[in-house]
Length: 415
Ligand code: FES
Image (cartoon, rainbow, N blue to C red; front, side):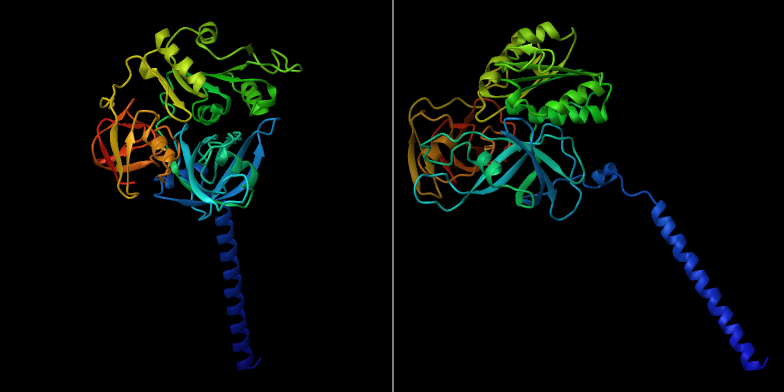
């Protein structure tokens, strides 16, 4: 062997050793990567611990009906930016900005932006939110955007793949995390949605905590989440399911489809709840709220243990609740809308300054219409506004909420 051949052999051996070394390193790196734990949902969730400001874009990843009447539809929302979502408090809601075409007869009208709020209906997940929306029939002849228009928009126009503008979860109607106190969740109709969020959170985070779920509705056709709830009750001994049908269908069977005939009222609670302290969470249509919430207080439930969220203008009156912040004006008062350049006379006919503004064609933002979301917050330039009860939303200094406010004196509003 010549010296050149010997040198070639040595170089080839060194190259082979180098390649083997690189191969082993790559395999080790791959194995280490495969073995490394991927971020858990909890960890991802923990990273996204602060809400975003303003609007954020979400893509509808899927939609599906929750009842056989096809009137309650769930929408799953994923953030377009792909970043983990902040964990919300079970019971909170999302605020949407929608471009809705008014359902006016005759010529199609251009879309207009409206703001609406819907409760989250699932427990916190790091990469998606879920809301469940009931189609509300639009009343005929409403001069402004009727209450059912945004729900019809969701049902008729929002499909998988669509992009929606959404504000961060908000609201103070949230479950108390103290696991020592049994909870009573009472949902009427679509008021079941925040209860589903609270229930799913309890089952995941506090599986030993006793939860009594009362769900009032007419019959099995509008029984949302029926199989899901039955599966939960079968799998979780701490869940006590109480379904009440007020108008059972011919095929509906007590003991199979529902437990109680009639409405969810205090009599039913008296009969079925064990003695001891409970925390009550109530959400449902106005008639149910106006009947049930004061009845709980009259039954002796401490006000601190009664939590409720009403649809639309809050009309629940609790004995001994937070006092009125300022006396309402009894005589007619002037209300000036500065930006709109209008001065109008408030005569007490409207339930709120929001209704008053809309009746006179003054453009103001609104969402929940019950003092919870802050969409109608407006700068108060002069005067004082009266609220029947302290609003849920924290009102910024120098501002007021139109949806639950009435004038306590002549007003100048920035709108
Ligand atoms: S519309 Fe939500 S606070 Fe007024």
